[in-house]
Image 1 (tube, helix red, strand yellow):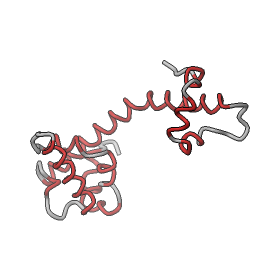
Image 2 (cartoon, one colour):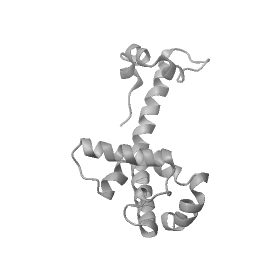
Image 3 (cartoon, rainbow, N blue to C red):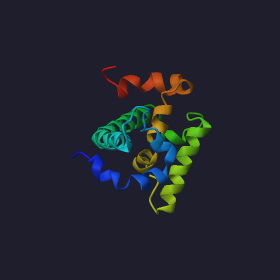
Length: 145
C-alpha cells in the first residue's frame, strides 16, 4: 500500500517543524513546489516499509548464526569470556543485562543475544575482532562465503 503524497501535504508543516534539517534532504533545487519533496518523503516511507521485514530477518538470522558459532567456540556465555570482547562491546552487553534486570527478566543467553543491536554484531566482523571472531566464525555464519 503506497502513501499518497497529497494526504501527507496536510501534515507537511508539522512534519517539517519536527525536523527541518531532516526534511530539507527531500528538497531539490529544481522542485516545482513542496509536493515534489513530499512525494520523495512518501516514497522513502514506502521503501522503508518494504525493506523492514527483510532487514529484520537478516538481523535475526545473522545474530543467531554468529551466536551459535561463538557458542561452539567459546561456550554458551561467550560474551562473558575475559578478553574476547573489547570494552565498548562488553559495555553493550552490560547495558543489555541491566535492561533485562530492570524488566525482571533472567540473563539467559537468548535474551542477551536478542537485546544487542545489529551494530554490536557487525562490529564483531571489524578489524579489531578479525583474528578472534571474524576468521574463526565466517564459514559458520556465512556457509556459502
